[in-house]
Length: 306
Image (cartoon, rainbow, N blue to C red; front, top):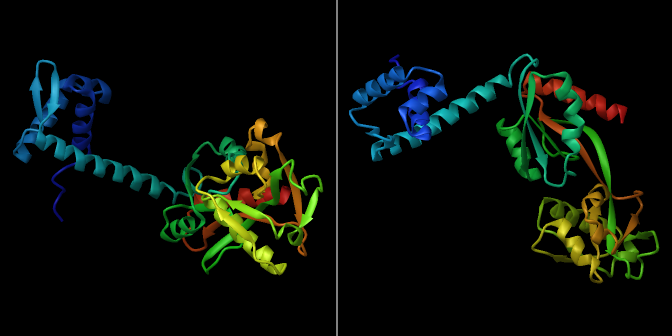
């Protein structure tokens, strides 16, 4: 097997010269001698047969060939960093990066707060976060792009394991002037004639699906009005009208006080008690790295304690 014609150090030299604007600046940034950086660049340009930089009295500027070279070099350097971090995930669990996917309907900060004690006791572990829809998270787990995901349960398909973490009750939100605003509780039957506003985000999709399921179980077809805005913004519209919105109660704390003063929160009751979203951690049974498995065990203990 032939040795690759380029090495990563050479690519890094080109990137740093371009970012610093001079060989002198690159030597300072890389902690090396200016003569060594200059020699490395000269030998690379001789092998390539092109000039990557145009030297001037004020520094070094990329040539068109250099700009094209740097674009590909950046892709290779970034890809190498991803390869390194991805492989570190397969350490014995004492160090490495754990990639965590978060579903859009999760309350902000809930998962990071749960994992903060783990991060403090395991300084060798760091977390990389990714927001995505439920379907995208399942695909990312399957492809190995993330180590674990926190999303709504239950999960479809074989090969994916999960542990329940917590649940959030889903409540009806309306204007304080709505006819049932002061009732405190209401059944789906009592709400069947109302118009429900549903946001366009991930949580809106889940709330819409829950509304459809619960209303049809009660024998009614829900009246749904999709809105081209996020679910929290829908609450502001509801506060000024006669419509109703659904929202996990954990999200109420993120509403501004000016909105909270104008809305009423009504508990919805049905044959199953109260509607809710159950959340859990999910991972691939066969391909979950050791570092991530330790995090999952910690989450399991957190859920048991809770």
